[in-house]
Length: 393
Image 1 (tube, rainbow, N blue to C red):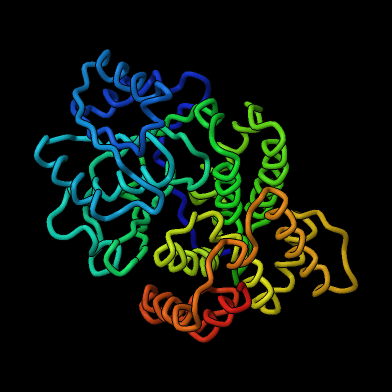
Image 2 (cartoon, helix red, strand yellow):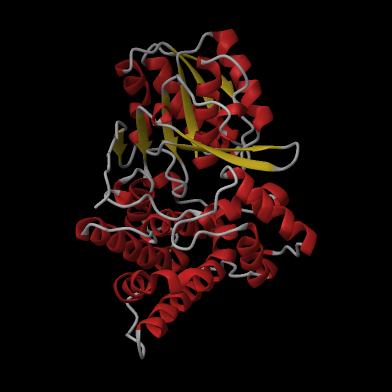
C-alpha cells in the first residue's frame, strides 16, 4: 500500500431536524459572529433559512448574510464575501446549501483569513496558510464538500474553473438532514448521485496497490448509490434512500475511499472542469458525458481494475476474458447513467464544441496540472485529452 494519511475533523450531526443544532454547534467553536452564505431563494422559501437564523439567535450568535451562489460558484461573489467578512469581523462562515455554496464559503474563508488574491490558491501560485472556520448545513447530496478538503471556483474572465485542496478548509461541522433534499428536482438528484459515484471511481481507478478493505468500502458505496438512485427516480419522497445517498456523498469525498492508494486518477474531473468552465454545464452531467469515453480510452492500462469494477461494483456477469468483462462494466455504468436521465455524450449534454474549442480545453487541462501528463491510469497528453473529448461527442 502507499504511504497514506487520513484526517477527518468534521463533526457530523445527521437526521431529521438536525438544522436546529446550528447555533449550539457554532458556540462550541467559540465563535460569535458568522457570515451566513447561501444560494437562491429556495432556502428562504422553504423556511430553512428562518430555522437556521432562529437557531443562531437563540444561541446568541450574530450574523450577516450573503446569498447569490450559483452552480459552478463565481469568483466575483467570493470577492464580495471576503470584503463583507472582513468588514463585519466575522469569525466563521456558515454555508447553507450544496457543494457550490460550501465551496464558495471555503474560498471566502481563505480570503478573509489571509492577504493577497484568493485566486492565487486556485491557480497554485500560492498555498493557503489560514482559513476561517467553516460550518455547513447541507441541502444537496452530491459534492461531498461538507467533509472534504476541496473547493472549486470559477473565474468568469476566461471561463476558468479551478480547485484548491487543503485541509485548512475542512468544515468544523456539517449538519445533514435528508429531509432537506426531498424537494430537489429529479435531474439535480441524478446529477448528485453521479458526482458521488465519480468521487469514488476517481479514487478506485488508480495505478498502484490497493487495500482490500478500502476496495470493499468503495464497491459497497457504489452499489448503495446505484441502488438508491433508482429508488429515488420512482420514489423521490423516500427518506431512507435520501439518507443513504446523503451519507454516501460525505464518505465518497472525505478521503476514506482513497486510503492506501496512490490518490486516484482524476482526469475525468479535470476534463469536466474545462467543460463547465467554458459551457457552464451541470457538473454531474458533465462527468457522465465524458466518463465512458475516458474509460474506454484508458482501460487497457488497468484491465484488472476495470474487471473488478465490473464484477464487484456493477455486478455484471463475466465476459470471454478480462477485456470483455471490463467493457461490460463500462457499458453497465453508462446504461445506469441513461436510466436516471443523464447524458453519456457531449451531444446528449446539449453542447457541440468545435475542434478549436476541444483543443483549447485539452491544452487548458494540461496547463491546470502544471504541464504534466493528466491522470494515473494512463498519463494523458493534451493530444490524448482532445481524443477523449472527440470520442465523447
